[in-house]
Length: 396
Ligand SMILES: *Cc1c(COP(=O)(O)O)cnc(C)c1O
Image 1 (cartoon, rainbow, N blue to C red):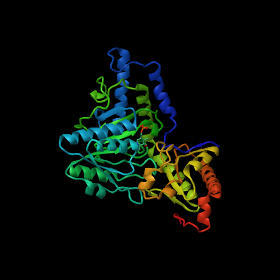
Image 2 (cartoon, rainbow, N blue to C red):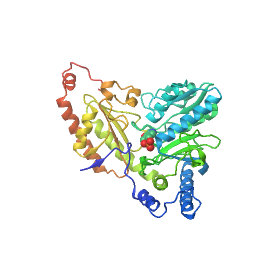
Image 3 (cartoon, protein in one colour):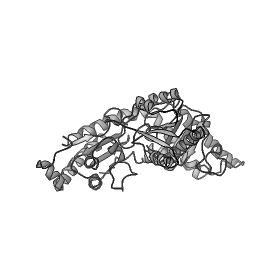
Image 4 (cartoon, rainbow, N blue to C red):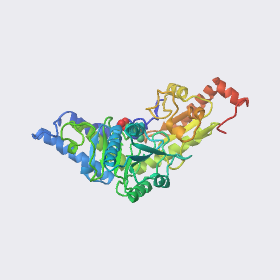
């Protein structure tokens, strides 16, 4: 059996997305900036994709900028708000301790330029509150950036409430919605979102393409200078095939949000139930306010990396945290922010499902994890100390 359960890292492209791309790699290959009909055919497609994506987010096409993905969109949003703030002498930014590194590392770079950053606590359940945001905002705050849903533990933030707080305070609000877009209903007007990032490869679209929504009136700061593409705010010939694939994947995902969510929540909850029946385990993040496909559990007395490798041998592709931190030996910054001690955070497992996963696969995963966890515990000196009572269990 081969089971892919790492959809938070990336997804398989849908047939719809692939087919939407093909004509733009063969017949319709013009440069949208060219005045001839080949170019204009590409320009029309580009404009159509922009319209469709805008409609899904509840904004206008002029407010959509195509980027190389979520990381670039996050960077551009944050740097834009920082530049705007700096002009008015406002150099304070509010964010959270469990943002994606595309946000955290951009903020660190700004700190080196004299910005001050407040990272909000994510509490025991992995959720920041609108009150926390409200209390952190100061007269010199130029930006609040809070992710829509977390990529490791899947918790969904009260974005509408945070947006309302920001509007009241007159502070720009950006949300990294990379994990939410195509999975949850988003409405930038209702939720008072000024800037939003999304990435196609997290909803069955191609890699290397994303969107930055920036509300009318926000003058975006260029990260890339050159031609006049994207209203002069993001130079470089547009990646039309990827943009068409993204638009098609986004339409498809948005059309299926309700059906997919109903199906996934069932699979997710069964998977959580099965994994938590393994002794000395704990769920990371709120049980209800989480992405429909996200499961994240810690097992005491084991090491996440070995768990992943043995699961891979059994045909299960999973993750211990985010793809970005795998490969480093540090435990996930998200689990540490959640208050998990290092030795517990090390034994984490993230399974992120998509609508193609089945109930049968979920049962297989539960058995596979059960086997691997007991195998690893059987070999672990730490586990022996825990069982003999020499050391105390952290997870009861
Ligand atoms: C994947 C991801 C990103 C990065 O998006 P890319 O398109 O891979 O650059 C940013 N934020 C979150 C929450 C993500 O899950």
